[in-house]
Image 1: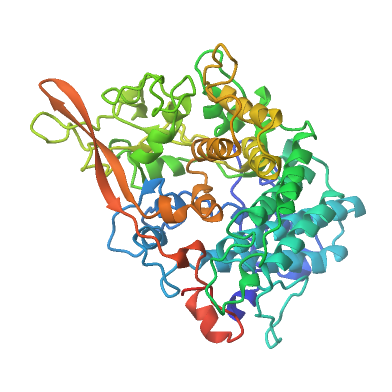
Image 2: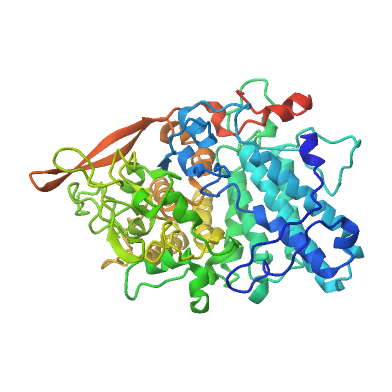
Length: 584
């Protein structure tokens, strides 16, 4: 850890400019020292801007990629997708196979947050000598504090309690704090930083400042942290073995009031009336859901109103390179499991297990929730290909059992599916020159509604407000309201029924956005979801008719250790008072 905390990040790289003017398109500050950076207002702002670059690294769908080879992210480490087969050891494979350990685990969740926390502290230490105006200094100081809290949250949900270093900028030879703070101390620190910073920020930065954190971003981070703190894993669970310092990974005792705090934090954002879902169902049901992930192209139409925190990047085919079928130049960032496909309801909102849903196992993708079409590429799914729109992806097998082409099941995909979430698959592909929007939402309003629904149900049970939140999400998804205007939701649900409904909605609405890996852990359902045979779908022509047959892809393995990431071995080995997480 000492090496990481002592990293002096003084060289600020050129930020890749966005296609549309934004705060990221402002500065070049390479090969500069602190005296130069903080004597020039442009360089000072550029230093702060650089700290934004890593805010989405942990949810990056290509998180475990290397310089010259694409791999996936957390989607392959849980029940969302099959990881890319390789002789190289990657963290998604380690979690799926139950072989995760401190020696080979990715160290990014430890290194990048502490690197950026140090950057923030260096910025705060030197900000006052910058020629920026006093109001600007106040705003940027608050931004930096929210960013620091953001990186501490990344540490928290990976490891539990971690060393809090305050505003200190350690220099070579300094005695460094390596003892872990408790989970409670970390939560309290993040919440306090969010509360204090929000007072000095406007709700939603706009124009060239769009993408910078505002008070809404700060409140959203607070709401997410409090939701985690109230969740079963952290709220008085017995996951820690006897003798382990339980307060390092959660609260020793359950307190239901933590759900109230989480509920109120999410409700505060809703009551700002500053954010809303982007609804566009006039021509194609669920089209607003699709455009949410290409929001810069619909900025003037209100698509940005859903974003509370967004990772801003230049336009590129990055996600297409990860997820496209081989015929479109994809390289295997993960392959959706059939279990996730089954979680999507019908367009009426009824689950496919409901006898009244009309689901046909031999025509399984017909009349489904429109989000399925925008999330998963299944057989005959239309995709852009080398300049041509709406070219079907052929995943089925011919009569003799051979694939129709390179995209076939068992050939191009081990599950019979690809991922198309967040891709501009109607107009771009990895094998073509068109560069679509590539920014990724980190917190969007749909998550806030789901956070509120979950916390409110845990605090006081089902209510009209919870139903309203779920209906808003389903309406935007393009699900039919029905004669009862319930969008397929069961009326008068019990607490348990509502809990399950919220969890299913969260699974499909937020699929492949980095939530599922952590959700099944904080809900403590991972021993069920992560210890089962993951399935795919084989489609084969039989007498000229396609036959659909689910099949087992891989048996996932679960160990209690995997509720948390192990602290990297090299950090533990050089810091005796840095306690390793349980079971490692």
